[in-house]
Structures are given as C-alpha cells and as structure tokens.
Image 1 (tube, one colour):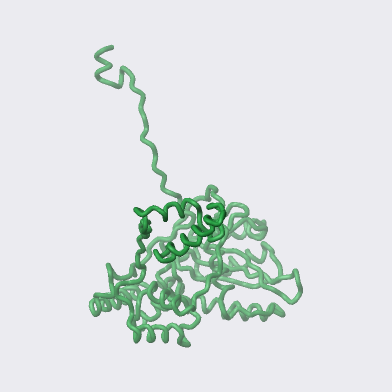
Image 2: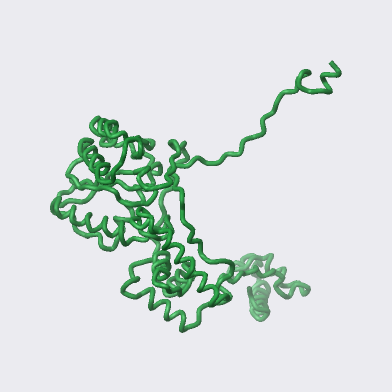
Length: 366
C-alpha cells in the first residue's frame, strides 16, 4: 500500500511527463504502475486505498512462557541427557522423573524460535493399491514382522545383511543376526532359534514379511511348516505392506551413533548391532506405544508406567490450570495393534425390487 504523499508525488511526475508529450501507459510503466491505477488515484472520491486488510490470526499462545521459563526449558532441551532427542521423546522421559516443563508443541516452538530445528525432507507417497489381509495383535508373541537390510562393507557393492524380527504388539526386537549373504536356510535357523528362546507353541505366531527370496525359499517355508508358524506376505515392491520393519530400519540407521565408516568384518557389524538392539529394546521410547520402551511393553510393565505419567500430568494441570486449554495428554494403554487394517467403507443401502407379492397395496390391486 502507498501513502497519500507517495501518490501525489507519483501523480505529479506522471502528469509532468504527459504534459511534455509522453503517453500515459508508458509513463505509468516506468514507475511500475498501470494506467488504470493512476486513473483511480486521480478520482477525488477514491483518494484513499479501499482494500480490506486480510484478517491475520495470531498463532502464538495467549499464555506464553516468560523469559525465565524459556531459558529454563532451553537449558533442559540442550542438556547432555536430551541434546540429541526431540521434544516428543523428552516430555515422557521428564514425566518418568516427575517433571513437567511444557507440552511437546511448546517445546517444538521454543526450538524453532531458537533456530534449532531441521527438516529431513519428504517421503514419496505410496501408490493406492489393495492391501494384504488384515492382522491384529492383542498380546506379545502373536505376530512377528521381519526383513533384511544392508550394512556397508569396505568393498563397494558388497554388503553384510542384517536379519531382524520384531514383535508387532510390543515393537520389541525378538531376534536378529548379521550374515554375509542372503539365504533362506539362514533365515529358517534364526526363526527356529527365536521360537525356542521365546517358547513359541505351534499355531501361536504369524510371521509377516515381503516377497524376497530368503522369505520364500524352500528351507524357510519348510521350517515354518515344521514349527507350526503361519505366514503373511506383502505385495511385490510395496514396502508399506511391511511398515513396522521399514520404520524400524529407519530408526536404527538414523541414530547419531551410527558409524560413518563401513564395517571391516562380521564381528564389528555384530558388535554394533548388539549395542543397537539393546538401545532400541531397553532405552528407546517408542512413539507408537505411548513412549515406553519395547521391553517394558513386552513384559507388561508399561501399564503402571502410563498410569504414573497420567498422575504427573493431572497434578501439573491442577498446579497451573492456565497452561492447559482443554485436557491432559492421552496416556491410555494401547490394547490392540493392527497390521494392514481394512478401511471402513460405507455401503449403499440395498434396494429390493417391488413385486406384487412383496408390497401389500400392489397385492390388493393385483
């Protein structure tokens, strides 16, 4: 928007140019205006800008942190214990310690204002296709998901292979091994060892995987049949059918502790994966299971932990009600986990043809 003084100055310059013989359109173009704008400005009844300013909504909270609270929260976020964690991981850990400094969104806002946020980019959206049969788990050791991922070696084009099984209900890694090749026989041996260590009975567990050759090999299929293990498969080249394994690999490979150099031998790779699995099972708070560790959910101790977190948040709300707009965070126990669930489709009402035998009025007319 231009002020009245600026308009009068521009109108004077354009008027002088036109008086000297210049065309109006050319004079207006030299100052970045259109002839229609100048004609509107020359109308005394429209001496002011009549555009309605857009309504801007303030997205900042009505009860922001004070300067002291902001400094305290940033000190906690940048402390040695939490400097590598996002607020979604920090808030439940503080709740376990009986502390509450702010919500997840508030802490994200503080980090954004302090220019401490990054963005890793988008992921290509999946193609809309029909999914495999839906499965659900209500307890540990009912559904296992597994897959194989690459680990780099010093030789370009050669890799070590991480075989990894994860429990669908608890997200706990129930079995893993690093080999130098992909073979169905090795996968069958690992599955047999998992069933033995976890006491899996016949018909108790279903194993979901993609369509790789180690998953469909005769040795693997024979082992599953001998152990009484059910099988579930993804569609070819559709990673979203096995999302839990893919998500697990992303979590493991995006840790700051991931070595920058390739693994020199199998022993080095297995040592690293040993530490990785221990961290994931016993230290990592998983966002999909209310930020408890997979080991806590697998053994059933997460119920009491979630109840304690809810108590901490309730006390925080009572102590400072102005910091809460509606209700506290949901710390309820998740009792069912779905794998490739079916979407609810609304069916159109069925139409029944009217016949003389079905309708009483038409039956009388007949």
